[in-house]
Image (cartoon, rainbow, N blue to C red; front, side, top):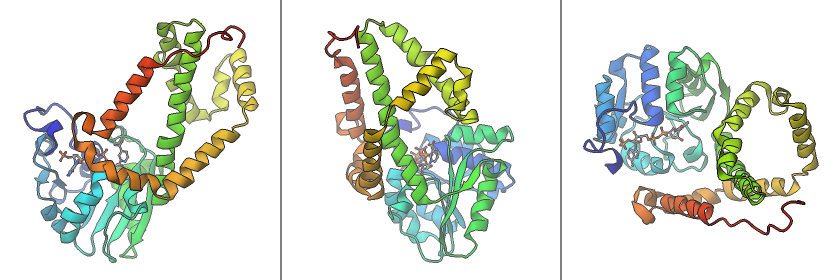
Length: 329
Ligand code: NDP
């Protein structure tokens, strides 16, 4: 049992029994799937209690849940799916069951064992569970990738679209994709794009601090004002370039001429290296599989805790570099 949410640690004061699981189960029910036809498989802990308190039937034995499922939504964290699905669910699963994945990772890397007659479909919302639920409640759709990864029945696309509809994704936003495309884009964003954005903010902070700007002013200017969040909001509506028109002429001139002056060659090479030599060739997956079980450990034995510690340490010890040219640039 995950110690984070034992019954003792967590009174039922949160709206979740799985980020996606809680949202999708409630959306399915509100779309008219009879409650008797929905079974939540969850270990015996506060999440299971939460699901029961919302009127769902709950099964703690994953093998028993698998045995009665015609459609199985595999909504547990990606890193535990191979272990849990292959060992506890797959052996009892009907040979004609449909397996629904919300992420391409384990299918693209071929880590799950399916039978030939089973359908494997991807219905992958592009947002966190609370938004999947709240947008559904507002009668709106949400961006979602849909694909058929294995068409055992020959009817996989109809099933995938029906399930996407039942969780609310086809009201707007569902598009055709694939496990490969979803995994490539997801891991690329996580391992190439966002690390660069974090690095850019860190370096910008450091250079401006060297030039005499205060920590407080920098925090306000760079993110606490939420200006970056607003820029991304507007970019989602208008595109990155067109949203510039909401800014002053000085800002537009600086941003456009600055962006044109950067050739991006080194960045492109770095991005390609990560995409081809880390993501698409399976190297990251292979390395991550070796440490995956350690993510459930406490303290410094957990590699994720260590990465947080090192990042904090780096921020604390980041020394301004040479300052002699700070004024003249
Ligand atoms: P969560 O981290 O919310 O975990 C979901 C459930 O997994 C929990 O209820 C937990 O139950 C159970 N669980 C965790 N570890 C184990 C284990 N070892 N054995 C059995 N059950 C376990 O998952 P998400 O909802 O974030 O992710 C589910 C899927 O959805 C993934 O494929 C993910 O990539 C995808 N997805 C996630 C998004 C997100 O925003 N989070 C967005 C789009 C897709 P308990 O510990 O109580 O047993």
